[in-house]
Length: 394
Ligand SMILES: *Cc1c(COP(=O)(O)O)cnc(C)c1O
Image (cartoon, rainbow, N blue to C red):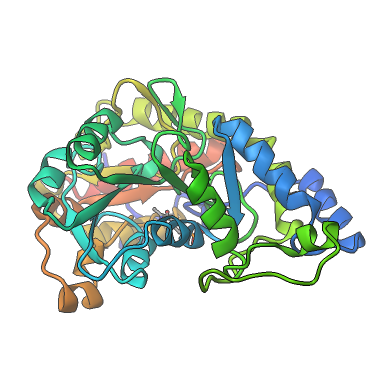
């Protein structure tokens, strides 16, 4: 017997909408922000370097530079490479737009590589096919929170003398062969957007394994100036020098105070996400109408997203109908992502071939996963998904 989905006139699983992602901000976080509001430094003050040091220690690197968003972190990383017009940067199309846009903003050419369909991680084999004499860098996206197969990427960057950038906006708290994300690539970008592992509202962090790029990043985030306000104050001077035009990519003290407080809870947030993921794996184990992305060995996955692939051959409804049906059950599903090369701007300006990406995009769906989910929220998701998919099973 099959229960009737809400979209067909049945009773919805939930009365309220369960969001696919949400931050966990508690009283401690609010007190930390309030303290800064009562001080006289609202923007770059003591909380910035404190957050940077704690973050660097957490991901086990020497240098971390706080910036105003994940996008600013990716932009800063790419800008430090001093890319020229014909330079090419290889990246997956299965990512958030910002990864590719930053390449365009640096005046270089984005070249989209295909992904492994079972994990949505960039394919080293396809990267190899797309490397040319103009290739300068590779951006690895740790999709959904699962680190890429870095050993394969190291081989490529050594063989061709490239720079490796990690877009780790999904993978704070994850690790590969016991090494934390943050220290796996030459430069690594993190985001603190509210749906990510920790939040500063908007915010980001860049980690770098190389002192020169660290110095570049400090200047780039502050208009390209060599001394920030705190250092000028210390050195009792008004004067500064600008060596290149930068941006205002600073993260405020207020946001860094929130970041410090959130960072203390990172392990708890990640373990909560991993528990929810395990629950989904168990619940959907014998269910053949969908398949979660594959977990790879040798790495710890931090589950920013929980992505499943619908088995559309066995369903009479389209992905978009199932999407709407789940929303009507009160389950805030989402799709990550529409491939970047399918966006008008990229279609109009670049030629791209990513067959697996185009194909897998038709089947993917992201289920809610975040630290404020309760046990009954997780069971609601499982029941609603099973109800809707079973109803349309052929
Ligand atoms: C969130 C995200 C970004 C951008 O981060 P913002 O902080 O929103 O600017 C970039 N890349 C990926 C993969 C992301 O998920």
